[in-house]
Image (cartoon, rainbow, N blue to C red; front, side, top):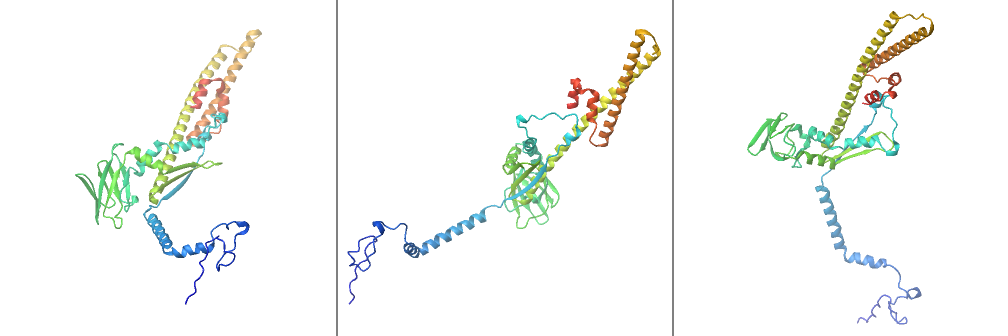
Length: 369
């Protein structure tokens, strides 16, 4: 027969003076040991091994589903280097002191221009961002020659059907079709489909309001000047790599085109100004030459007394004035030749000195313009 066994005393209970078989020694200083014993943890894991494994498998499956359903994002980056072409064209004229106390940073000013809604609107029109593909399987890069002439606030939805040799665009009762590579136009929306994407036979295209398209562009756009340099970093994030690249390239190219137009207009204004000043100088030179010749014919320089000294001084003054006008004329001709040749004028500082710009507020204002 089995002999009865003494029950194992609870943890921390007295061992009954050593009569219990499984009695435990009391903790030092009469306190329970800190922490959970390792054998208790192992026991819990063994008893609930199935539950723990199931939870881990469930978490792994959920994470895999979230990763699968999450749309990938692609980021395109471009850098813009600022160069002061305008300053090189106006050396000696517009060298005004910079007010450092105001904290004006030209790089931040250009950053705001890159982030302006006007520039973003031009990119929206050029890239065709008013069109939004509502079917994720249809790539935006398949659309080419996108042009939206609908009113800026207009919204619409187009039905796109793809066939082996052509495609069809429908809006309500209005329908247009064309072979691949040729554009179609429906309700102020025109685009061309380069080819039929694999596995896609229809798609829906939403036409967004222009301001909403600008907001969407700004939401995925990041423009950051690099500290300690003259470089601005432009970054755009999209669900398709081709779309991200199109937007970044469109933004940078539009900014460069506007900057070039502004520089050309500024150069044209300076050329017209120099031509006007040259014509005025020629007129003044002719008048001074005529006055000098008249003076020489009317009076002689060899006289006696005060009259002779006065007349000689007047003649010398006219001669000096004539020489100064000749020098000014040569300066204007040289600068005009440099502007017509397309190079930066190097002698504007000498021109400013010759014209006494500081003493002529009207001429100073014209030069600054």
